[in-house]
Image (cartoon, rainbow, N blue to C red):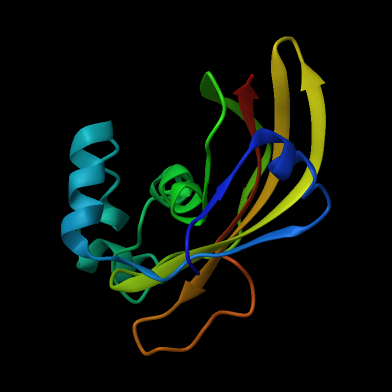
Length: 156
C-alpha cells in the first residue's frame, strides 16, 4: 500500500475505518540477535535453535517486543500527518502476543483507527494493530502474532 499524506482533520475523519495493511517484513536471525543485544533480552529461545527445539519450538523465535517495536515503522509506511507540531507514542491500552514468530518468518501490520479523542493541544488516536504472520514456508497464520491497541498523540 502506498503511503498517504494526511492532515490531522483528514486522519480524524477516518475514525472507525481501516487505515491499511503494510508489506511483509522479514525477521531473520541477525535482526533477532541485534534486538537481543540492544535490549539485553538474551533468553536462549531467541538465540539458540537447540534450546528452542528442546522447549517444543521448531527453532528460534523473535521476541514479542521486537514484533511490537516495529509498529512505528509500519505506521510511518502507511501514512504521514502533514500539519502537526509534534507526535508522541502515548502508550498502549492492551497488548497480546498470540503466536510465536519463528526465525525467517515475515510480519505485516493491519491498522484500524478505532477511536479519536481530544487531549490538551491535540488528539489521541487509538489504533488497533494486528501483526499478521507468514511462516518461512509461505503459509499465513490464522491468528495474528500480536494484537495491540496503541495510542498515538498528535498535537496541533
